[in-house]
Image (cartoon, rainbow, N blue to C red; front, side):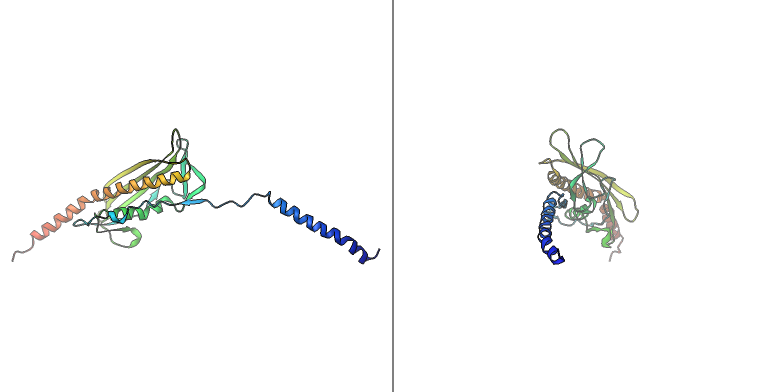
Amino acid sequence: MSSPTLSRWFMPFLGLAAVLGLALTTGCSGLLPKGTAPPRVYVLDAARSPGATTPRVEAAPTLIINPTRAAPGFDSQHIVYVRTAHQLEHFARSDWVDTPARMLAPLIVSAVESTGGFRAAGPATSGIAGDLRLDTEVLRLQQEFGDGPSRVRFTLRATLSDSATRQVMSWREFDETVRSESEDPYGGVVAANRAVQLVMEQLAAFCTLAAEPWRASKRMGLKTAEQQLPVR
């Protein structure tokens, strides 16, 4: 049998083999694991509304807000939950869009500004000169599962210091627990935002009250200076 004859004889079988191979490849691809979907990401955005701003008080200081720190275990974008005491776990398919500490920065500025107790308030990176400094640390932000509905617990430590003397004027720990409306990450995120909002309101009030000794000393200094002016 000549070579052209052999080619004509094998050609149909080669075509059939190609079709079968394509079918097998297509069929097997359906059995392969599909690509992993990206995780859902959530934000903390429980800032107070601008309408809550109150008039500025007399002799108000400027407040510098240092970057918020976070305790070990809460310094990542993982959303933390707890089922067993002292054991932190992370949701596999849900994360914060940024670390909670960094997301808190604009919320703290907004909350403090709304009190009217400061001439200005801004992050340390803003370059403004500040009379007082606020340091904060996230000690806990976790969804707790156990008996009954889960709940989110948020704990923040705040320290207010005099920039000139570096002396601590006051410090406090804020701790809020909010019940989750659903037993999933989203329910925890909603509860976390509510807990953060409650703490921001308390933090703003704390800063205003803790700064009062500074204001009192400033008013006393102005009064003394006025008394020492020569009488004409």
